[in-house]
Amino acid sequence: MDVRELERKAEVAELFLFAARRLGETMEPERVYGRFHELLRDVVAHDAVVVSSYDERDGLIRCDYAWVEGNLLDPQIFPPIALNREGGGMQSLVIVSGEPLLANDVEQRVQSGSGTYYDVDRKGNVRKLPESGPPGTKAVMMVPVEQEGQVVGVVQLMSDHDRYDTRDLEVFEGLVAQMAAAVRNARLQRERLRLEAAEAAARAVAAERELAAHVLDVVGDGIFLVDGDGTIELWNRAAAAVTGLEAERVLGRPAHDALPAWSEIEARVPVAEGGSAARSVTLPVEAGGRDLWLSFVAVRAADGVVYTFRDLTGERRLDEVKSDFIATVSHELRTPMAAVYGAAQTLLRRDVELAPDQRQRLLEMIATQAARLTQITEEVLLATRIDRGELRVERERVDVVELVRSTVEAIEPQLEPATVEVDVGAVGEAAGDRDRIEQVLVNLVDNAVKYGDGRRVVVAVDGSPSLVKISVSDRGPGIPRGELERIFEKFYRGDPNLTRAPGGTGLGLFIARELVERMGGRIVVRSVPGAGTTFVVELPRA
Image 1 (tube, rainbow, N blue to C red):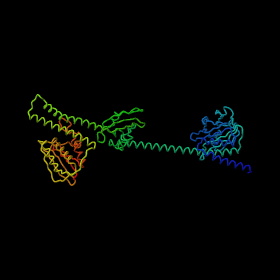
Image 2: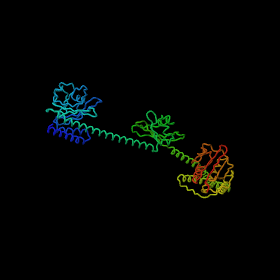
Image 3: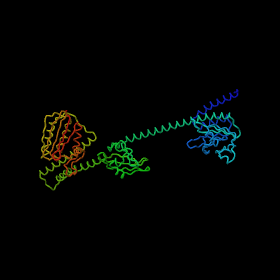
Image 4: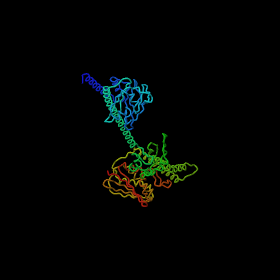
């Protein structure tokens, strides 16, 4: 090998090193093709260069890059060519054989060959050969592009005037190898970036879904999803809390099996579609052994119908309490006010001469009914203060035995013809508010006379190591088992017909329990229908 040949090989090696650096500077395949062509332009004469890829899955050869006589062309103008596995056609021959091709007799090959050939000018006009005439290309070099031992493309370098030799092929082949490596790296990098972006998007979607799931779980409204088959696919924490139905009991089950009231919900709750405003419907629903009032809204979604509901049981109960309050207080105020008004009108008449005893009875009636009006007002105000948390209860040492005796002695004349029997022992002192204990005792004794047999009430005091107990017993008809807890509700009356019930606002037992609990105690009630009722006030010892 002479010196000139060594110098040429050194120049070629230097060219390949420079090409590797230059082509490796970009991670975009399209820019790699452009730089590859820039390198070719300085070392091998040509009029056109075409880079094509081959897809084994469909057997088609497609153009990825095309430059013709100074113009960069759109690869889409080149029709895909089916691979001729028999080796017909120069591109197919290179792909099938995996060997480069150098041909200076392109026109003869086109005329005599069995492959598919196209010619394109600098304006992008494509014509099929040889039907449209002889090719403009005189010489061509084609080099396969390989990846992991498989041919994945072919690069063509064409000249309309010059001939190519093996030295040109050597340079061209080396540059194609560098270009193929750079394109492969660029595509791998692009794929890596795509996968990273997809992974980031998936993480974002997962985070969004996790956040949405968290929001669904912490919102106060119940939310559930019923799919197209009528199966419950979502049941959030609030839905479980409101209905008492845990997610495990309803998820994956048909709605008509999981929700007893489903048929009515489905029939009466309108489903908003297409962005229309949703309309709420409030329905009574039995769930977990409780009677609830739930306000439903339904919206159609891609996966089915989303239902949201809010528990309005408290609001409905509040409305009922308000109605009960108005009815009860109106009734309780009407009777004493009518009595006071009638007595006053009688006393004011000039045309009637009243005997002294008649005037006295009328005045006593006015005083009694005025006291009744005062009691009603005080009970309502006290209940309001309790609700607002404004009631203060003192904690002091109270001699319960002395308090019971003095209280019964003071109120007994007002209870005639009923009698109150006191049964006390040496129990010591309790911790509480003396005035509030007295208020509770008066209320319980008054109730025992009203709702008992009206003849005999027993007040007893005993204790335990930690408690002092005051019990008030009557021999009346008793309280039905189902009402034992409800009697402590505000405005609750044992007889729903107010005209037949003993007078009262229905606040007495509510106030009594609240006062006792604020003193650290409790009220217990025991009752046997037909055998009377006993209320027991338990207070901590001092």
